[in-house]
Length: 65
Picture 1 (cartoon, rainbow, N blue to C red):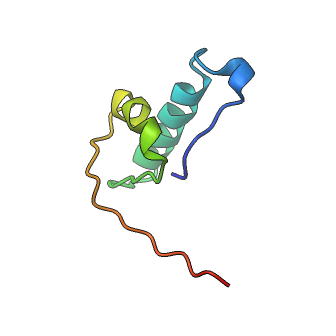
Picture 2: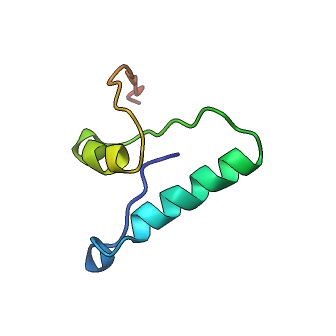
C-alpha cells in the first residue's frame, strides 16, 4: 500500500481506516499473506492503529537528474 492520504477536510472521520481495512480484506480474500505499506513516518501511528507493525527498516534511494 502506498501512503493513504485523505483530504484534510475529511480527515478524522474514519475514511482512511476504512480504505485500509477494505484493502486488507481484499488481500486476505485473494490469499495475500503479507501486506506492506510505504508511508511518511509522521503517519506511523495511523498504520499501527490499522494493525501494522512499524519496522523502520526501509531505505530509499532517489536518483537526482
